[in-house]
Image (cartoon, rainbow, N blue to C red; front, side):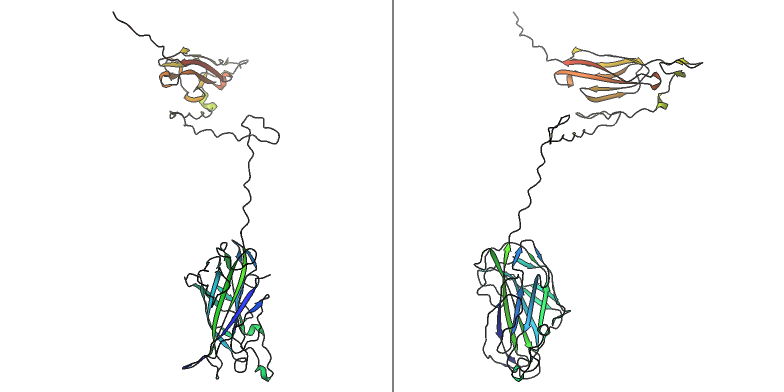
Length: 419
């Protein structure tokens, strides 16, 4: 289904060096199928604007019979006109207007301008099989208040005669497409109309086009002018609302369990750590140490790892031992947490769960230590954990040793009196 169309035909005549008027015949024809074939008196053009009856904002209308096109047809009748050919001189296109009545020569009436409801989305192409096949057309904006376009043909557009011989002498009507130019082009529906051009249900906009041509047949009618105009109204439909956003159900924090039909939340990403040997910035942590290859754990004479028995000529390797020492209770000054033992490979110290130091060599006293300064910490209980890894030859599993201390509030002192 396509929108209702209205056709207006104007007659202008011109002889070389002599300009005269022979009157004007105006006829409005209601069309539903896009084929124009009324009976005109004298020269005249049939102009059709084609747009689907209902379009949606955002829709791109295809070029051609199922979308948007303009057509200009030679409808000249009466002896002296009906066997003449015409050459198209000018085409004007009005893509949208807020009023149907009062449109003249594709010009929107004052106060009814509503541009850019529909906008050409491409230049035009002459449809194959019509009088302008192979001719391209350029849509040039006129930049006026109505938003009109001048449609320029990039070539000669000739419309063949209406009849093979004068109709009064028994001439027959020629094939429609030999005297008709169809210009196919794409359009985009840009927005809803601000002004409703028709009283019908819904919101309508009106499109219009006008064209002029001159007689190119040698004779008494040579160079006489013909013109015509047409309109079409179409209903603009608002785009459908976007689908509602998917709602993600709340998740249960690890370790759960999640309720039936629910899910566990993704674990929080660990904050970036500082590679060994550090130090870590305030609030940061040191990265966990990389495993130490067995080749780097060598030390001492060859021995057999516990529980043995030792191979001939060797002895049983010493098992790993470790003990931790540090201040407990209230701590107001700096101290060290130390680990002493045998077969120790490394010690990773953590303070309140964060890696503070990894020690891979003991000091001169054979201690693996972490300095603590309680004055830089918050008041309350603090915990030091020392994860001790032993050499592989000791066959001793890693151990975590712990020390707990507090930074206590300074005791209040009573006032001193003298006298």
